[in-house]
Amino acid sequence: MEMRDDEPALDRLIHEPARLAILTVLSSVESADFVFLQRTTGLTKGNLSSHLSKLEDGGLVAIEKTFVRRKPNTSVALTAEGRERTARHWDQLDLMRARAQAPADDRP
Amino acid sequence: MEMRDDEPALDRLIHEPARLAILTVLSSVESADFVFLQRTTGLTKGNLSSHLSKLEDGGLVAIEKTFVRRKPNTSVALTAEGRERTARHWDQLDLMRARAQAPADDRP
DNA sequence: CGTGTACGGTCTGTAGCACAAACCAGTCTG
DNA sequence: CAGACTGGTTTGTGCTACAGACCGTACACG
Image 1: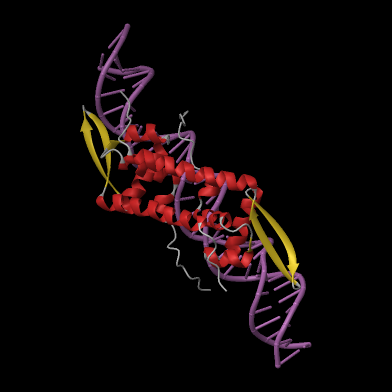
Image 2: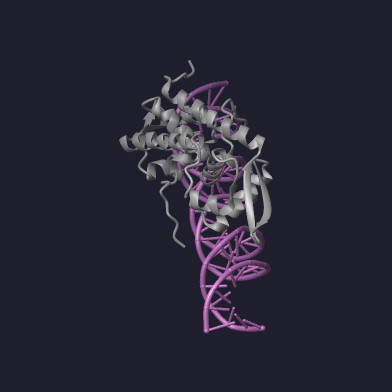
């Protein structure tokens, strides 16, 4: 059963609240480490860790692991693609809301 | 392990793409029937049906089943609560995005 | 009056995923 | 050396979005 999809459907990878929070923080900050993200998003470590992996797999963020003062440190930054796709996602949401405000453009 | 949640966390019932689409359509249209919703959202029948049930359980929409020209007809409308909560959801998203634009308000 | 076929939905099975708890590696403190 | 803390990753599981099977009714048409 084919469905027409003139509505591009929101990207789940981005739309997921936890990830949207992460991406949003990152877009304001150039680069953030694990602990900072955990505090700002309120996610648990495990949860944050797995979301970051998914974002990395999706090419939205770049993760760099180093040692800072003998301790492991995970630094995360938006990739160019990540920045663009996140912006586009907000655009889609805007569009959607705009349509909601406008009167129905129903069929004949 | 307690987390602070000054960020109210997005309502999943509303945030889910399929449901957001439904709510968005409904907010422009006063009332819509099943088939109309199916076409505008691009969801399959099964999927749409279960989402509508969840929205109804959550008190966001009111569903009215009647017969139109001897055929069953399911009509859906936003409740007052649904309208308000949907609006609030958009507000939360706005807030989130606004924070992203602003420079990081990190801790000392 | 069967026998299609289209309409309008609901019910069911399943794959995928968000989440937190358990775990692990290394460091510091006494 | 024991113990606690920091900074994560891996594992288990309960939920749920999704589509496809299914069901009932209505309207052909021979």
